Image: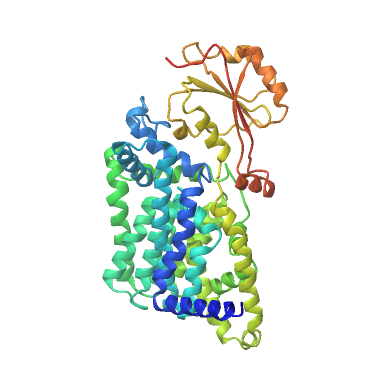
Length: 517
């Protein structure tokens, strides 16, 4: 068996040579593998917004329904914008229309298609990240940066989710690339294209306008007044071509949804979360895996180069840190650029530092620790099914002709929204019971018999038998339909932070009132 070692050594040596010859190709392949695995095996949705503000809205429009009354002709009275950027859900509307035309009706099949498309879109981040790093540092550092963008444990899982925070990353990366591809002084053409990509990012997620503002400020600091105007013109052109056009069609005036979005967020700056200013620094320090993350942050803040790109990222981080409502996912948009800029600057510092040259083994140890822990996190996360119990509960009812659902959550009084996309019906009655002392008979009779729910969903297993008996006082005997249990990821997130609720959902049918007409 002595031949195994030299053969393995030769194999890895040849792979290394192939990677050096065609780095972009191999980085793309390496990045694609876990993303496609996540596309097929990581179902569900990560956060409320990446399902209900995208998938739910788009499919309801295809089905001739407007589940949350975003569209003016469904609001009646005095219709008003709801503050939603329409490009991203609109693209899903067109995709679901195509699926309908092709006879693809199953929700799971449609979501695999959606995740595969997102996986392919996210490859732009890896390829452009490598190119930016190559401009800022050596081929070895660029290769390492590309590997991190391809395989960092959170990237494949989040890249296939319907999160505008992630979907807006590729156009920001492309904007950054065009700002620096011509060297220190980009041409007018490059600035215009950079502005167009920055504007596309704004069309997807309004907050990315801060990145564009930072770029414009940096260009002014470099006395490139004309360049700042050209970049701004490109950004405004992209925003006007999409958002203004859509809002003119919907509301008869440009930027109606955008202004409502700004107004709502300013009015609700502390409604959801109110975190300290350093919260996002802690997020970045954790997500990149310490102590490697400390090197990235040190490099990012030590060297503001190239200034337009760095200033765009810094302004995004700075203003988000000032805003009270800080949810971890909000900062994801700039995570790849922080990594690219920070790692390149750190490697430059380390190469010049006599102390680090004398302690090369320490840095190798940091990288080994980072990659080992990353691998332990990457594999289970890539195959994690998020919000499994909510999706599964709807699938259990998909073939059942129901009229409505009673959502009983007297345990914690925090009932989840139902992802009706997986149920395939929109106009069902939803009665929510959170008061354990409520009269079940009076509660059930609040809805007329033609629309009365015929399924009860019990959220959580706390005192379940007593809760079922209490509900039966109003519904009569209940028949068990099934149970939907949370997935591994949801259980882990709950252990890390109990705010992330994960519960078993138990479904019962009401006999003698099976619904359907």
